[in-house]
Image 1 (tube, rainbow, N blue to C red):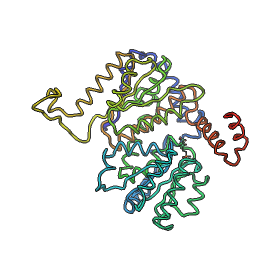
Image 2 (image 1 turned 90 degrees about the vertical axis):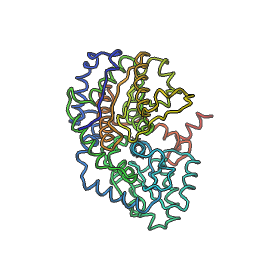
Image 3 (image 1 turned 30 degrees about the vertical axis):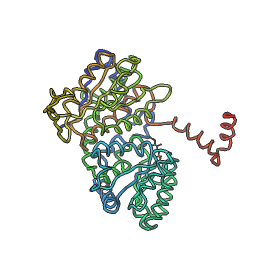
Image 4 (image 1 turned 180 degrees about the vertical axis):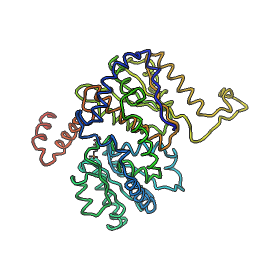
Length: 446
Ligand code: PA5
């Protein structure tokens, strides 16, 4: 079986094997807490065996809903934010033709996203683009009350009903939310939308392998069964503590680096299709570990693009960083660099070479330069950008995140800090019920 792999040899000049091994008991205890639901946040462990317990019938049902939307819509807008957005966006971007949005004869509806920001121009332009188009909506909110997606849904619901009529709009709207609670559940019941449930015990950032991620991914035309199958492989491979558990090794290594003063981890890719995978990963680790005044700061760069912007800082800035490089082994297509008679750019020495060979040498050269510059790096190889390996990668990072959070000594499954901005925003907007907060914040602003 081909699989993703982890290589930690390039960190060993910063921390040694013994320092990484010293964290083995804490990692094993973390795995025990996860497997036996005995740690803090254990009511949010639904992701743990989610891949293996997802029934084929659910995947078939999601596929059937996706087919309906694919058949009837030119565009499907997935509305959601945070964990209700990033996983689907990451997987779709990783698997899509880079120029799909500009191709006229697309055989799939375009999957667009909304509710992930409060940009007035973004929403205006989206609504303008959707004018006179056949479109459908997947509205995703676990709580059913999040402001950003609620605003986007209000606008697009009204537009879809106006353009397609109320009955068709109801048929082309799918709601993914809590089984019983929340405004979205109430509305979905009233309007008769097709719905899927986000289980109580699956947190937003761990929800990509639920209908939250699976439905938009299926609408985009990708194989959700292969994605889940890949996750099942990694679920099995990382179940128990031990030398072969790569989630455990990653968790131990990054915590050893953190204790050695490396406070920021940069997820590096050499494939532009992985930009949003970095965004998904940042949420997973940022929300899971950044608490109690602790936590590795998760950052991401897209190389070689960012070698020409962030490269200087990474090579020679403050030595508090380490990297985790995601390297895709096989490209999907082959492009050979042509010979040029004039050779003005001096590149004939690589004529006849595949572009990806140059990319791989850029990666290797950078990794060596960064080690020399005091930036240790781990490397995760992914055989190819295919559903199965993305499923493995997603589960690998989820399991490692739980273990790592417990090694760090935080509850990896809550996110109390996310509420602070909402409280202030509602106070400033004078939301009913926030009168005291409004008064306090106005006094503070003078
Ligand atoms: O990880 C999380 O819990 C958050 O990022 C949520 O996913 C995000 O805030 C959206 O919440 P909801 O799905 O309830 O609208």
